[in-house]
Amino acid sequence: MVRRREPEIASRRQEEDMDLTYSAKYEEFRKEVCAYLDEHWTADDRAKYGGPEAIFGTISKPDERITEFRIGAIEAGYLYRNVPKQWGGGEQPFDPLKSAIIREEFKSVHAPREMVGQGPSMLVFTLLEHGTDEQKEKFVRDTLLGRLLWCQGYSEPNAGSDLASLRTKAELDGDEWVVNGQKIWTSNAQEADWMFTLVRTEPDAPKHEGISYMLIEMNTPGLEARQMKQITGETDFNEVFLEDARVPKENLVGERGKGWIVSRSTLKHERALIGDTDINRRTLDGLVMMAQVIERNGQPVMKDPVFRNRLVELESRLLSAEYHAMRLLTMQARGQDAGIAGMVPKLNGTQLTYELAITAMDLMGDTGSLAPGEPSAPAMGMFVHAYLWSLGVLIAGGTANIQRNIIAERGLGMPRDPAQKR
Ligand SMILES: Cc1cc2nc3c(=O)[nH]c(=O)nc-3n(C[C@H](O)[C@H](O)[C@H](O)COP(=O)(O)OP(=O)(O)OC[C@H]3O[C@@H](n4cnc5c(N)ncnc54)[C@H](O)[C@@H]3O)c2cc1C
Image (tube, rainbow, N blue to C red; front, side, top):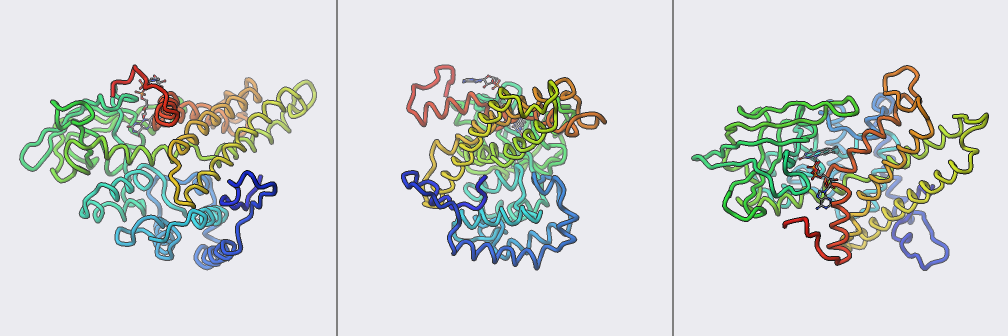
């Protein structure tokens, strides 16, 4: 796989010889980043924080050492480069190639990168676009540093794909909203401090126009989060019940009744989060290793031409996803809007995650269904977990069918889906 690459050049497909290296200017910048890391992220830090969380990112509250490092890296302009300094970001000129180098180098020494999760990856950008200065002051910095954790209360029992059908209502009583209703599939609500949510404030308006975007503190009396057990055995999901929960009037983001527009901003960032090629690359590498050791009919499965063929197909799809990601990066570097092409990674990436996991399950046979924690589970049960989880990522942030509808209608100009009343 090509590691050091220059996406600017990668997209010039007509050129016969593609130079996939970064230019001298960017290699100089890489040296600067490495020098910064050598000075500020010690060998002890690298050993202590080198676990799986460093790879996948974490949404839990970080410890003091991590926060201290992040504050320094923000001041040095390496993290949250697209967030103004005034609100706690690194505020640097837009340069996706520098951002890519920072990600690569921070990742290689397990240094804390930007926080992931509903708060830093989704809400912050929504607040920067639609929030008041008071809201930015109160929430952005602490959210970027992981001091405030958030959950997303969009879905309801009868409002998932058709989100605008949501029924949780908020009525104004003096200086407070009184909120009643129920949310579902609220990831991480059990550890969140706040929830950003959608509520119906104008019951008589057409369904997309009667919604407001609200911030609710999780310890508000009348709010109860109940954990739900998932097929993986974990309990990240919650139902959130709201019964006469009183919320300060000023906790709306954007105008009253205009929450649908605000919610689009959050969703755009959510979709961009899902479908990262790194995870699929790691799964495929693991799959190849397993195929070299697991034997069938007296020889490693890797020697079976039918299985090899499946692997080659997966590898080609992954390579095309990686090149598509580079193309998007090139467009960003040129200041071009990726448009509907930006929706492809989520749709493609989650489908590939699923197919990689299914192939791993086939490879392992019966023992493959042993869960993590079972002593004889192959690869510590990692693949069965990946398989069960892959079913969820196809749905989270908008199902694959809904993504297809959007790409077909807005991207290809096909007729609108008659089933969707919009
Ligand atoms: C891992 C995970 C994490 C999640 N985290 C959160 C969270 O933190 N906060 C939150 O608010 N929600 C969360 N969700 C919920 C998620 O947003 C919804 O599950 C999703 O939007 C689908 O809604 P639904 O489950 O009601 O399914 P439905 O909308 O009932 O869909 C059922 C099936 O019908 C299909 N379908 C529906 N409408 C159409 C159509 N018009 N055309 C074609 N097919 C259609 C769908 O593709 C799907 O296959 C999460 C879900 C998952 C799996």
